[in-house]
Image (tube, rainbow, N blue to C red; front, side, top):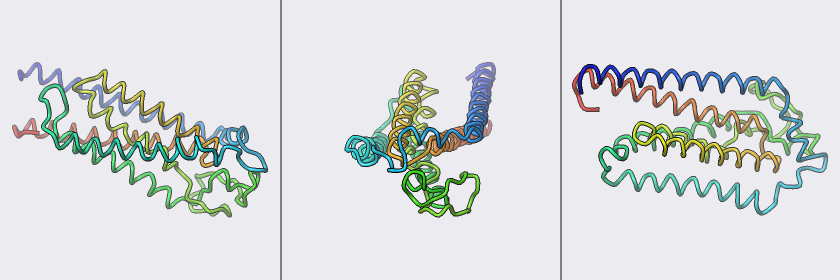
Length: 241
């Protein structure tokens, strides 16, 4: 690769990194505005009342969307592992090393968000007094303050079954931007479906799903930035990435 081509590639990567950082910060600002809006409760009230949530135990939402969505995520992850074991089609698919790295990032999302959830004292909507439960509604920003319920409900662990796969967008975007965009759309749509299902069931507020989405995106964007820094350092040293 000529010096001009290297400079162009480096500039392209730098611009992409700046866009990723901008998207991450804008999404964070929008998410904080949602928290300030207080719209979580009105959204939950649309589906529930003092008698609870009518959709909590419906077959479609609890078995198909919730349980089926979780199973689908593990099947997809297993398929990625099988694919990573096969030789890569040079120039047309990500390398095996890249596939393994992004499988690791996806697993990090799958583990990190539920770990935060386990530390949270925030209870689910169906645990609140106004929906027939015993808990007071407290902001999830009141970290460690018990609300009288079972807690461990923020952020949404189920949403990670979709948003954890943001990594596939980053995996493919250098080689096949169209496929990368398709993965991004599929992850966003599936995550929104999971979030709406959990809201209707009373399992999560919208903010729980939105924070899971942001955390998974931030983890993937951060991992991508680190990988690019490592790649550039190895290229400057003349060692293979």
